[in-house]
Image 1 (tube, one colour):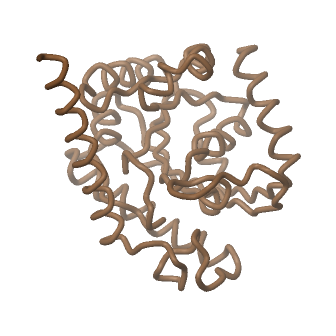
Image 2 (tube, helix red, strand yellow):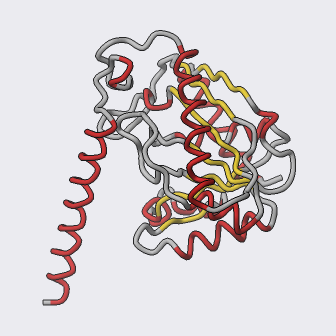
Length: 255
């Protein structure tokens, strides 16, 4: 029992109750009751990780150690909480240390949550996957537990205001059968992407009406979200702008 983690979960559940969120969860039995697992999650919003831990908690009150960007740990407000929950900081410019930490957690029998897409998908379609989840599974021997969430982007996502008031939004979470760590990282990553793509389509089909023109609805379903190609271009432009600012800042520091 971890008092801090348990307290945070209780607070989150109270918030979800106040928001009127309606969770529909399937595949809880696919989360191992003991031992390690790489919880691979699609990324559509800032609060995905809070929802992605629900199946594990329902499966014997297990806790997931999420990999999250280092800036969250640097914050005076969220840093102490993230460290108390034993989450793993990720420095995107130097990822080797966080990777090693994740593998060690897995070897100790922990559940580690990771976003194979690395960043939020503005299109709400699955982006290309990084190979980190597969490599962690292969090195540690832990199975990959594909976990797909749909509807979380309605609460808070990139480029749109958060909606933390009472909304009554429905959020579907589907956990598929574990993928055993066999083969090479490239093939395993491709299999993971295929499995999660199939589950995402299943959850979308079962979600109910997707209103035309809504920001949270993919272009493929008639929404106003950018297509995957448009979203990739936006991400590339944002990364280029960020790199330019970083280079400018470093240049000033060396003057």
